Amino acid sequence: MWHTGYDIEINLSLSDLGHPGLPDLLQEITTSVSERDPQLLECLAHHEKRECLSESGGKSPWMFIRRGRVGGRRPLVASHLPITHKATPAESAQHKATKERIVETAGRYGLQAEAEVPVANRRSVSDAVVTGPRDLKIGWEVQYHHLSPSSVRRRSANAVEHDITPLWVAKDRAASLIDRAPWVRVDDMPWMEIADGKEMVIRGGYRHLEVWKCVPSSERHCLVSEGASHCGAIHAEWFVPALCLPQRKHIRIEDMILQSATGESVPVYVPSRGDGRAGRHMWVSVEDCSLWQELIGEKTPLPAAPVEETDDVITFAEQEVDRTCRAGEEGRFVSDGRLVRDFDQPTGGFTLPRMPVQRSPEPTRITAAERAAASAALGCPPWELGPCAGCSRLQRRYGRNTAMYCSVCRAVLNGR
Image 1 (spheres, rainbow, N blue to C red):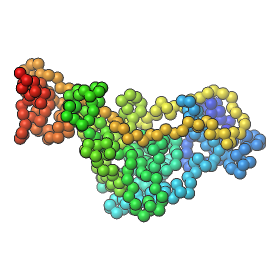
Image 2 (image 1 turned 180 degrees about the horizontal axis):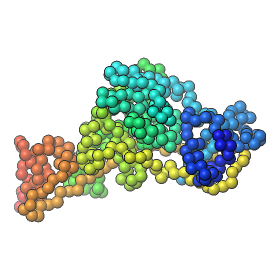
Image 3 (image 1 turned 90 degrees about the vertical axis):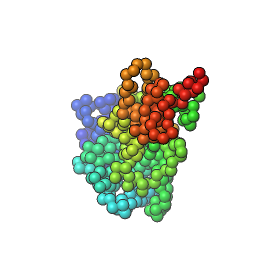
Image 4 (image 1 turned 45 degrees about the vertical axis):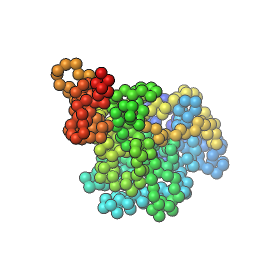
């Protein structure tokens, strides 16, 4: 393709695009079309006065860049405008109705809200910014059509840089914004129902922390042992409302507007157990967030910088420039379907080490994380916790109807 700003030819198969002296060129050409000159990138055939199949078909010779997905590779693909980056009339109406509903709902709650707010450096515009009573700013981004992961990360990082917490709204379980930034997913509803106030339930992106002691009577499975065994440790994991015990109700978008602005619900980032480079973004109650931070000893709920998953790393084939217009053939570079990203499975499991059996007269030291986890798992206030007189593991020791020995030790004693 041809870069009309620099008057240079670009080779997407090279890591430096054929111009090692322009280190920011890749970021410039992958910027969303809505945020740059739509005529910045030109079909090479059109520039060289040869036949551009797109233009001859009544469409545009101007182009944009997207990431393909073929057999595990992620090449850069040049595609002709428009279509992919132009929302359909139905999507545009849904987008407008959702944005207006956010602003109107915030106003009814007495919150300050404004639509189409440019961020300080004007590199992006938030669909709506809702400001809470402690000057907490939530930047709502309604994204009902595809947006590249790099654009999601860049716009989110730009918002955070200016003290705005991004909150992306999707309607598709395969939306690329999921887990690239704080997000929620709603149903795909006609714009009239959105505008008329029909209930909009948060279907994904909000989770609850469940903490339990891994004993035979627990309804939860063990996170570390296979089969039906129980390890006796305390486990913690994040669940969607339907999988909580007991099951919890889904929250509505009105609840999310209020709770995010007042700080009752906060964004949390949980790294994946198998891959520290990837993880899950989720909204949670501030109480669950505080308990989670106590358990893992981490006080930063969001990653310091946007994380790029291995699956999103661009691959370069290092080939000669293809000077033929391939309009209509771009689909062969994106033949692999988009993967579902919004899963209902539990995520972020964490297990506290079992307290060691006391072998000396020295008192057992109980950490704040162990006390917080035991309090949540046993359903009692922290001041009622204490060590078992037999094995020193935490139990509900003080208060009414309690015992000096845990159930395991009592079973051993009664069997003698």
